[in-house]
Length: 302
Image 1 (cartoon, rainbow, N blue to C red):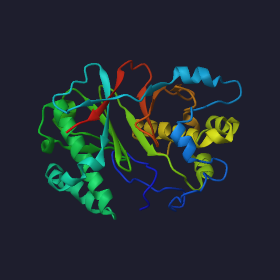
Image 2: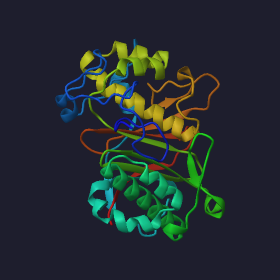
Image 3: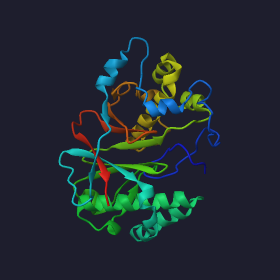
């Protein structure tokens, strides 16, 4: 499996880099019309999600941004009216991957063994172990005792009594050496993380996945800004379908992610939070509209 963009729930290398499973080549642009440059990544280009008549400065003011991650140990954390988004540096914990395997279930170990690359396997083990340690801390349960159930499209949740205990929900996303783990209480959430890099065939991907409004917004932007906006749109859509638990089969026009609070005709709205976890990465959190919980950044310290 190519190591690239994600398309999944709590797991990992999820998915192919591009439409036909080709690996991205350095220096390639996104489908020829959505070009990515190192300068754009370094300067953190402002997301311009404008179509005709949309004030991009007003949009910037509307969009909630999470970029401050406070160092915290995972001991007895308390959701306390908020949503915690944990940033985890997977490679710093890689040396402990072997010992962390004891926390994983046989099913998780089978998934780990399917990885072609040893580094991907270690990162998966670390992320699942951290997930168990964090959820165990929130619930006051032993990490190894937690059991997970999976929806029809693979969305994970806590099973049985652990799920009923306060209705704690979570979502995990990983890209390269970083992972984001979002934890909430009483509402479904979705989180997505992507390492920004050149991709082939991004234009065709956008045409298949983005709504008409999103495609129009991309086309209306200065060319230099389209690549970052592509990733912004992509991560919001991924966070949304992960919150729904339905996968990317959702019709593109069911949602328009060019606004901070989005929803289609007859659809409940969604609140999007832009996550800036570090240089070269973009992320997004999707929360049902009307949920006024604070979103807090946590930096995993073990």
